[in-house]
Image 1 (tube, rainbow, N blue to C red):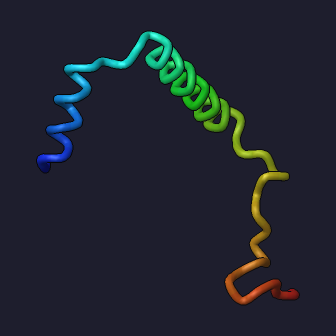
Image 2 (cartoon, rainbow, N blue to C red):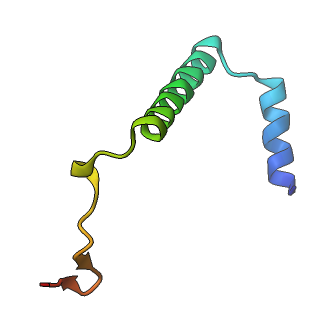
Length: 62
């Protein structure tokens, strides 16, 4: 751990975040967790999957 992280932790301990910011962080973390578990239980939708025919060199015909 370098000195910059220690300074950030010191500043966070001396000036803790407000309750609004903590609640906002928890809401965002909860939304991410819900999306993660939804994707794990139901799978990734077919319409969001990238075509395998498109590569770095462009579109390849079969």
